[in-house]
Length: 123
Image (cartoon, rainbow, N blue to C red; front, side, top):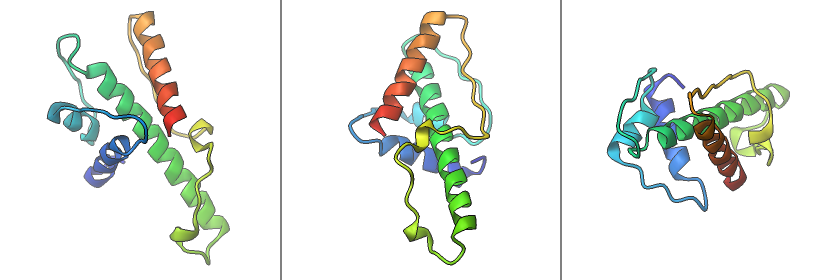
């Protein structure tokens, strides 16, 4: 995912989540689709936390999808990718990717956790 194409896929993935309509600014698009680590500074209400949570969620889902596809390919070497079907609960499965959201505010951490769960529910 550290490649530019992979991070643009994250942004397309976020914008394709059904039942959730995000109106992201060009700056938020850039924050989500930047392949490198980044530090985002801004006033409250500018979308830093939302963009961070979306980036974490998309990274997690994308990584789990890639892991599940790789496992499927090993078990089904003669089949084509179009035969692959993702498990309905794939976002609830564990993966080797570890993500962390840190804030000094326990309220903010709980809000991000709730938002993350809502995203999983809508996927």
